[in-house]
Image 1 (cartoon, rainbow, N blue to C red):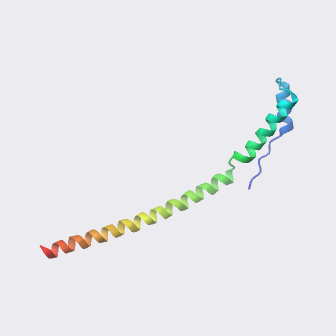
Image 2: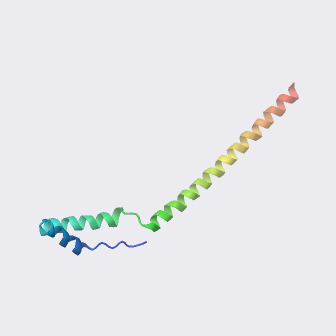
Image 3: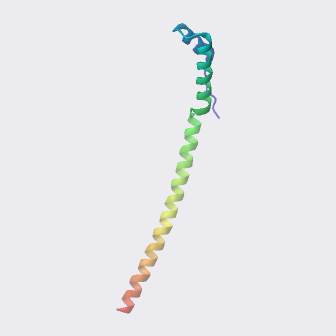
Length: 86
């Protein structure tokens, strides 16, 4: 997994420069770091998601093809039966 670097010290300094107290800046910086670590998707996460979606779509495509093939076979059988009866 890719690691995302977030410079909390620099962030705290910038927050203090615009009027945050030390405590406010530290809490805000630690929450930002936690959110980035927990919630932000990396490029590898997106590639893995794309691969999973492609696999799932292929599986669905195969299932649809099989079901349509079965419906076609059943339709041909019905038409053949009707032709014999008439």
